[in-house]
Image 1 (cartoon, rainbow, N blue to C red):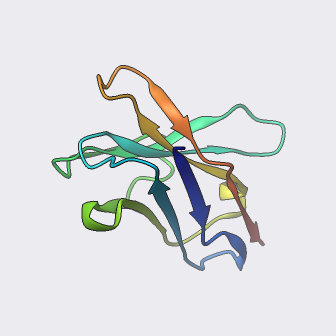
Image 2 (cartoon, helix red, strand yellow):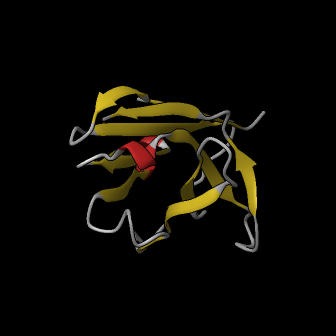
Length: 119
């Protein structure tokens, strides 16, 4: 059974940092794109960042560029999201996702981890 399990969320003051981890099990995702999404209170889920097996990465909203960094450790089947200079508007449930083998869709999802940034 494929599982993506996020960890590292919590409560942090504005300006602080958190590092989210997503550990995959049940199969190897070394050749799959992996990424992070988030859903804030009353908002739709939005794309945050993605990383491909080559290490190439992409980021979503301009608001996270320069503050968030996605990385992966293929040996551990794990993807990370380093979040710096956090702002209250970063408050959301953060979800890890993995793409299908053909790369066409986000097929696998974690349960999410809550990040709350206080002002």
